[in-house]
Image 1 (tube, helix red, strand yellow):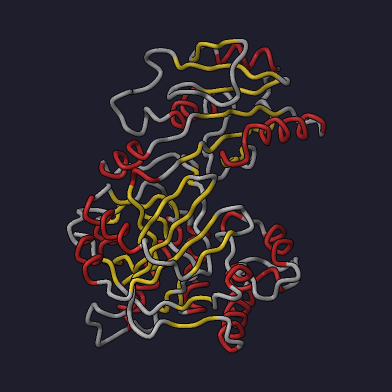
Image 2 (cartoon, rainbow, N blue to C red; image 1 turned 180 degrees about the vertical axis):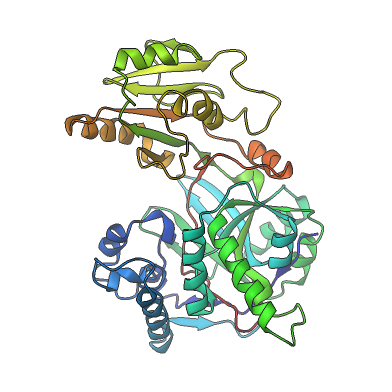
Length: 415
């Protein structure tokens, strides 16, 4: 079953919502967040990335940062920027970009099901990032942005959501990124919650660090709460749950700075040992197991040779794995892509022109670079890996559009 929890959400007043909602905290640098929030004291970035209100030299993990988050959160509440639902409810959240929509249920997802594996993961988390969000959540005693979950399409849920969304939405605004955001408040959530009880498992699409930190906060509160019953708000975390057939995954491309001692021609010779090269290629691969390489101002095609990967393995047959195991690690020396500073990752929303720009910029600075454009991982691949209990390589998926922070806040102090 999937246990979803109605709750009394804290949400921005409709007249200022467009000024409050913000990108997820982890898709912006501090400098980008500072620029986006400039001149807007109501931006949720003052809470989710509070370092923007402190000296730029401050360490991001300094206790002062979390204290500032709490101070700003209290200020937002004192100024009446937010309202709170009187009774526990669920929400429907629809995002529309360029005519394509995805509609999910915003709810509390079960910490117990996360811990027991019924909410399935496909990525590792970094201890520093996990601890950062844990401290941030503990400072606020609130979840400020949702975890992005997926369920396999279910006709009953689709029908209920379709019925609810025939009514006018409570929010309807187009944000800074051109995405239309609509939210409905479901004041009678019982039937929808019961429909989710028939879903055997949920999958994390995006937000592994949020899920880990929210669950850690819940575990700490459970351990310190002598009268724990299992119904407390801290037993759940903020999530939006979408049917798998509505989602779009974009590629997560790679740039490597420096050729690990190779000349351009020598690099191509080494690559040809494991890949069939074509002298020209489209920048964006058209199908699985096609990779495009950008070097010396030209796009080339790479096709892995037979025997270079295990097609039966859901992880090893991923294009990001094929690239990592046959090229990035053995040829360019990128053994640990999660920590190696020579590699950078570029979300597919930025397009392949961004790869060309970054490579040219690096070359002009005297460090030769190479970029790789990939075919996107599919939802079926993601769920197969999660079902097998395996882990994807880092930066395997880029979901777009991004869920917004600050639309609905989940208070873990009470239901």
